[in-house]
Image (cartoon, rainbow, N blue to C red; front, side, top):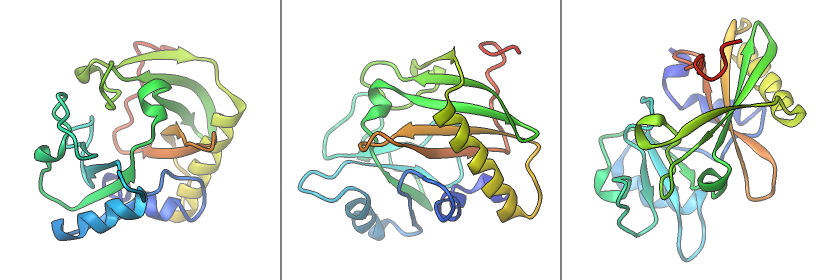
Length: 189
């Protein structure tokens, strides 16, 4: 239950690097949350349902109409999480590190289609196996350990999704424990 509501990201942020995340219950509070995660003249933020999967309901607030259907007009009912639009998602994509019984076993890179921020196959994204990097593995292990501490028991498995922030560091975008797609077609081992 803890992992089905993305509010867990705020708890994890007290222990590991997480893409800045603001929890919003009511639509009138969205502008303040967007300004908080993306200050400046032209804020750019991602708003997604707190309960959801597969990129459904993701909306980009940047003042433009997005042909992918992720512009402001597609906002569904809340509550939501609000995060800055991490620019590297368009180029580098999202890194997924798979942890089984506390051990990092593999890593994949999920890359969106051109003009898209969602990395999922149904939106044109693709997933490829990549060698495990020390940086991503370390963050994944620390994240799984922190989640275990928060829950009071170790996790048997997890997919730890990560993005590269503007300062070059990796941060958690999501921790998938409830329904962690394992990409067995790409990573059969």
